[in-house]
Length: 294
Length: 294
Image (cartoon, rainbow over all chains, first blue to last red; front, top):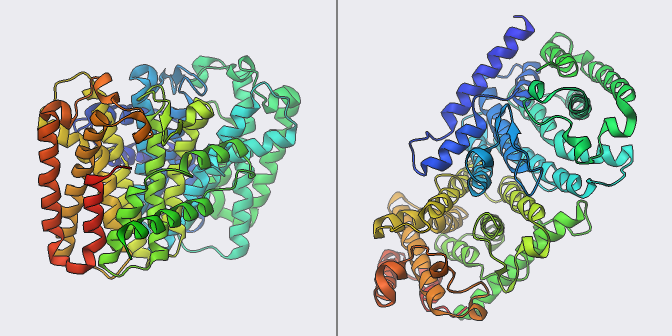
């Protein structure tokens, strides 16, 4: 299958799975369920589900299991977007080409949407028959750590503290390793947990790739934010500069930020090489992330 | 042991356990970790941990396991308080006798505190050696459901929609079964899961008790809100009436609300009777909740 067909297929599966896991908009409380569906369905690049499925390919994981794990990771991602867009955080009005959740509904509802999506993510991992119980517990632990104060939520806190600050490149990477990297890494490691267990060396290699992928994704995001139009992004462009947020582009300039992306891409491919053909989707996905014109 | 000594002992154990589970305030991101500790430590009646330990007593559960499960439930409770107090929700400035988290820190930090406490709750259930993996997965599922859109977060959404509305008693109970009842029920059922498995009949009875306990707690809360002073409550008193929120007191009047509490107390004791002496703490705790002068 061509990469683009594979990608569309996974994106469709992700949409179908989320649609099935989210309570119907006719179930009480209707407004909350409607808002959860508004935030989670109908858009989104589904980068984390794609990574999850691609990583599952390395160890022969069943696609139906990967659907559930990918959906759990995506639910955490969507909750974080809804909360990040709130007025007390980034105060954004546009997301995935639509009004943000608190604009379309209201702030209190958006707060509860994020809260309930997070609960649902863990419920999905715990109650679906994805792997043996010990592995599923390890998945819950991994996802909870990636989402928590020493992962994504912690990265947000570092980001808040960084607005208007002059960060070093090291501090910027520390922030991104938490804010974006932790969940991307979890998507990849959880995908791998759905299949045949990897040996210690293979797992270390995959984890190395996962960390590179997280940074790569952020560098590209910063370049796109500086470079693209709001219409292309589906979210407000040029926001980082407007908010005086440190980014790879503000620290390195556009040219060196692009060089950095190229370096990370090479390192990512190197990490995948020993997996051979089994890592094909992960490899293609890495290129797509760098070259993306979503 | 006297009930009051037992209660103090559990409250102390809960404080110690939370202190140990929460990342230190010197660990980055320091402000977030400091705020998480501010919200979770040093105060609180610990009603849910007490219920969890008391329910564990029915099936001979080890106190050290109950500590972890009780802490997980309390982390969910604390997260919900932090988010409920935010300006877009109840907009409250006082909680457990201290400034609320967003007043002491800031709104964005309080938002992340709630988010990260929720993640930590599931991490604790998944990574601590509390019971066999299948039982721990059932605990994660139970807690996630209790916290989510068809539990506590859903109850909050119903509560939001109810402000200024004339609810029937039935609608009010539907709200409370979700908003407060779901997590109280989870505290009791998770406590019971820490010990010897209960038979189906005993489990049904305990679940019946748990549902009554949730309502009872809310009726008493409404009476206290109408009746007590802010200093006694440690949170803003008379808030429900000021916000024109429907309560048992606004619907039934103070006298009939007290009758309702008495009826529920009797029903709770009846549900516990067949457990005999093993339910002693649950029974004492029920009385304490009704008579409480926290």
